[in-house]
Image (cartoon, rainbow, N blue to C red; front, side, top):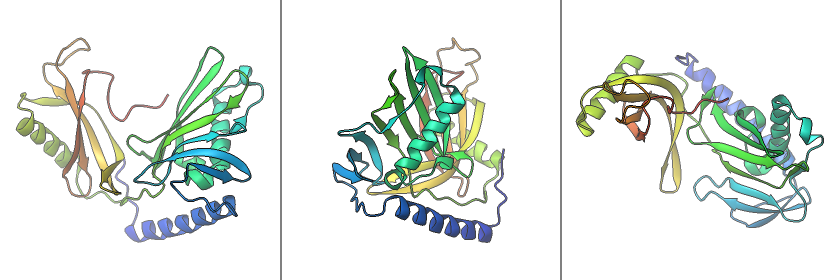
Length: 260
């Protein structure tokens, strides 16, 4: 498990430089558009679009072409997964000034072909860690048309690089939390990971780097066991529990979901 041993000074310098580069990229990509978050119909590089917006992040939740498709793809019947990933990168670059994320901030999570159509999904990452519950998805129909995309992205994600709480202490906090709140006996871990947890509070988002422990009662020893478990999110800076989520199956259901 990564300990994120990046000096804080270097982290701040990197973040500042990255912010300037991103600002320049989006300013160039969206030059002359004057798009205001909240507007339902916008013009992006001469293309008429219908956009719905996230009320907290002010990032698009959906983008649809009004008169033209978002993108047309050739040879859709013979596409490979690698080519699909390249198409996703092109799509993100094309609408980057709206999405305010770059292709290298997304990792391919799903690429499935059903009935001649491709269904594609991405997850946002930050310093190699998934941003919990983030997504960008689109479909390519049998004629190669991408008509719309849906997203839950966090353009302003930020979190400290250095870990202050040891993994063992965080696990103890997670187990104690379940013993005190769920009163269902002792738990054991089936999986664990790290992520960025975006906590929505009113009109803002607090970003927590977290350990995620997927914990189940000791009696849940096989996939058919009835006992459910919990994913417990522990802040790597404070050791506080920032989120707890029920897990319905004792095996194969852990958070965050693995990419393909």
